[in-house]
Image (cartoon, rainbow, N blue to C red):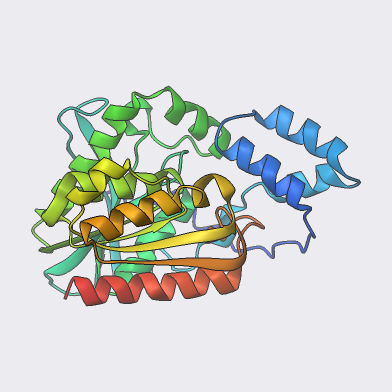
Length: 306
């Protein structure tokens, strides 16, 4: 019998996220922490001295993955399982991913879901289930599989991912896209979406796959080098946070390259949002921006994978 138990265990029921007003300086420190530029201890220590109540604000930003489950893994509209597949040139030659299919026989248009810089956590698994409910065959690879898989918490996951060969890690994602596109349940029409590190990797796949990728919807991901943008043939949907200078600052050069290449694209900046605003497991989540961006993402895929 296939292993179908996701990282969020069935006895974990959603809890109410406490309402905490968070100083922008704490958000900025959290961004440093999330991207591995400071460790957890430094994040909490610095937050405590930035403002009154800074430590409480910092602790409130830690993920609560029970909140991330919007589609149950037992939902009758989907079928989920973990699958292993070859990944030549990757970190171990083999990969594992969370495959979710809609009810029915298919074939289905397919979407690769690329995690942040911490492995396949419950939030990303839920994103895959959300796509399956919309009629897509979704695969969320776990880049940490070569080192034992997502370890159950983001701190350890972030450390493990940083230690991997980054070029081989991207190859593992590329091999996941190829596996999904060729899957027996796939229509052959492929899209990709990703968040943070996964957003930048979505750009990478768009460059590397050319016409083999029909659409991409990335969230606050690093832009590709301008000279590579001409290789993108996918229809691009680019979702940015308003308060994300490191990523947003890349946009003018990226946009110029997209225009020069004649690439089909749309870009949206969501007011009042932070980097990570789609992730509903932390207070960086912003419901209005997350909801609208997701509606746009689903519509983008339905239009371009028809």
